[in-house]
Length: 343
Ligand code: NAI
Image (cartoon, rainbow, N blue to C red):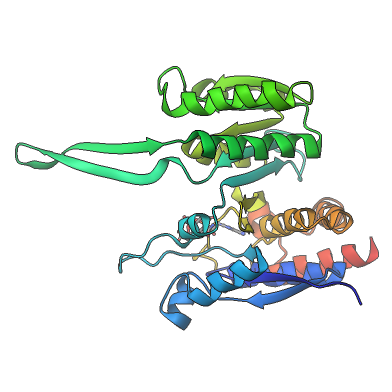
């Protein structure tokens, strides 16, 4: 009997369960060996267990170290912290991997194939913020502290450089703002340059680019880049910019990878405006499912899934409404499953 791979499945909120169903249908058609532990989180977690990140969900991920996750809504009020941020911290998911590849040709930017690697735990995202009152204005001054560590920078850069070698990228750009934030992003840049000289020289070309110039270059000529690696806030902004180059968040998958687990998800949110209507586009989550297969070294299945997605969208021209098509989620999933089964 084939070995089973235990994995946590969090359908999440809004359109989450609808797109997760599409991913499960694809996994079934591919004959993948996952043994799913289904868990609630987000609003679904509050409803079933009074917590947007119930202990059962955390325990499951602690056991399986592997999860596919739908979007999670953070309940407003009640002082809840974002479940996504909590997951990153809990499992030290320090690397956010966001590949962007043109799937439907003919958009504003064609033939894009770029990877953004973002540091996920440090920088200006740590949330150390405060106001200082001036006169009778309680918010006269706002302050935020950013923290980058050599250890945190090094493990992220090592992950990015290893990934570049693994997937055969020719060029990596370290994106920074060390001309102004000399300590905060200078440390990241310095660590990257030193690591490259010590361990990766000759394996790919390394360049450095300042964040503002990088944003302009990405819009003028995105093909000049192959992989971008950067700190938390810059990575957050650039990965959405790059998703825009390939048709928006509906086509953007992401992986949060760390020392203790790997969690795969679509980049978009729970789309409450279309939830329950059965019209959501499952492509981003399906691409994340492909990344999960690669992570588990099921590379043949991952390639079959990606080809089936391409063929369904481009040969069969079965597309959901957000892509200008008329298919609902079920019709798209049916066409995809048929492509997986029949080639
Ligand atoms: P959103 O990404 O959910 O929606 C933005 C727009 O894109 C909406 O018009 C939506 O209908 C459309 N859209 C998104 N995904 C789609 C898909 N697969 N197919 C077709 N159309 C799609 O962003 P929004 O409205 O800002 O956030 C909604 C909720 O999701 C919030 O509570 C937010 O906190 C949460 N969220 C969760 C994320 C996660 O768990 N990783 C990431 C982003 C947001």
